[in-house]
Image 1 (cartoon, rainbow, N blue to C red):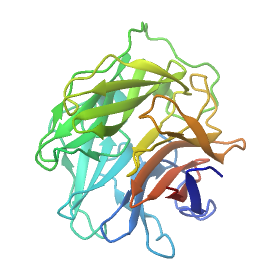
Image 2 (cartoon, rainbow, N blue to C red):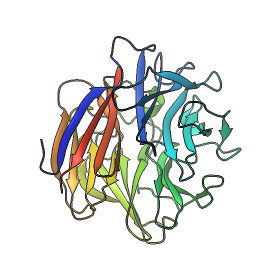
Image 3 (cartoon, helix red, strand yellow):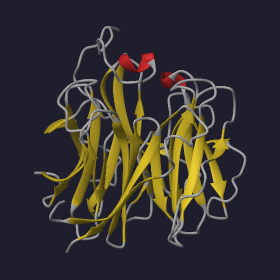
Length: 342
């Protein structure tokens, strides 16, 4: 393994032959104030199907609980859950609803008992279509107390945003857009791809699904999934209100999800598939680290490198522990814990 991260454990949240659904994808994790880890993902017969709902499991000191369906609000597909615990202890569960990605909306449920029970769903931004709030990656608490989430729209030219709340998630304000100067005429952006995504995903071009960190007070940064075979980046010096034009990092990207976390010691840890091909293979999946706020990166851990799909990671850090989850061949969710080596 690597120089900066020491492996504590690797496991599957549930066994591949015991799941009460055919596929699962797009996990998200959150470590609660009592040390419990919550994991959520979407699952059902196939991505985009009407029966896709949001499932949840909890990990205590010894094991994961049996997966439980916690949200299937209407007979349309549900997507991309994100879990966030407020300083009050209240846990928020965000997720997308809608068969058409360009028209989906964000619902939110609240738990006052660390995920044991959940409120009825409410639209995060009533009337919005296209997806406000977190599109896939974690919500980040900034130094001014605000919440910031990476958002994006998938309609022709894919465009990213930051969505920010100053009042604990009750209201949200969208940033200036972050996009690329690319042309798109409605054609497929992949031919003969083996990736098991909804067919509508192969349309569109640009950047989506920002993952965000704060390097110093008010200085916010995002890395972006792209159709252009590389991870892109944008920066803000006003707490995420205005952003610079997206620019390439040079890091390979296969047009699949990425996630980054800033550790307590300032080190960045990026989880991604370092494959330079649009809609390319979703293996290997690795961790890379940066000690200079993302200017340079070095491979730290290869999480998986066999043939299959290992994708859509979530990565968080707390008290010197880095936690990672990702899709494991669409049949389970893989989970790792690491100790940050000082």
